[in-house]
Length: 292
Image 1 (cartoon, rainbow, N blue to C red):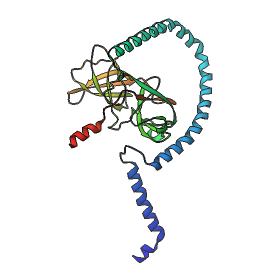
Image 2 (cartoon, helix red, strand yellow):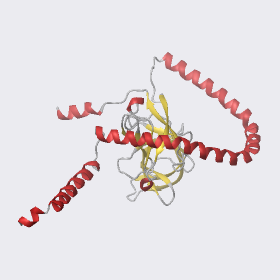
Image 3 (cartoon, rainbow, N blue to C red):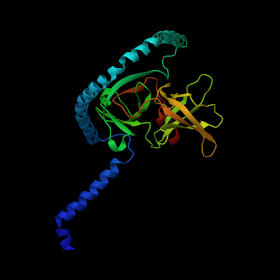
Image 4 (cartoon, rainbow, N blue to C red):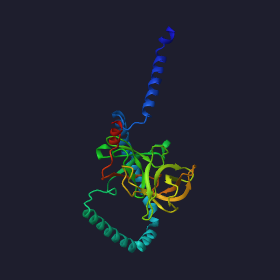
């Protein structure tokens, strides 16, 4: 026994292993915020990644532009053919926007679940072992970014902010299979009201899962799925995708819909973070009432 304790190298090794296991367990725990040391490390790594990301994007963009020049003529011809239609749609949108503003003024409505602000961000890193789950962006608390804010591209919703440090943030993609990764959604149609939750991803079909849909709900293939705005954070009307298949759940009590994402999760260089301007309900009020 005395000989065991005299071996200082073995004691140091055992203590190091215990500390390492403790740190791993602490970092994997479900926490709502990051420690200052974690924020410093994330910001430092994010800054270095951003420095290398910009030149890489410029080089990749140059070769992509050379390749795309081959199709410019044909694309311009198609765009010109649809220009008149787009102009008409723009006119109708402007008319509807003015009518909406007039109605809000008449009803003295100052805020709406459709109102939100956009903050553009650059994707600075993506973990190879969790490629379909998380990305890192170059915006953080100093830019007004908060946990659970929606993240979109020009094509549609891609995820939500998971962790935030001072100058960077981590985004959890819709494809992540974590059980807490849930978004309130609905069918974008005037004549039906169908609500559910986007939770889960089907690897085989590449579709998002819309669950908790009522068994008698009128939901069909081809219908558009958007955010409902009822989850307390996301605004209403963010495009998620289109229904490709509908089936009953294993118990027959609700329906599940397979939703083809409108946005691509593979090539993410730039994203936009959304901050809803309408106030959200403070869940701490319910907790205080339950405690009282």
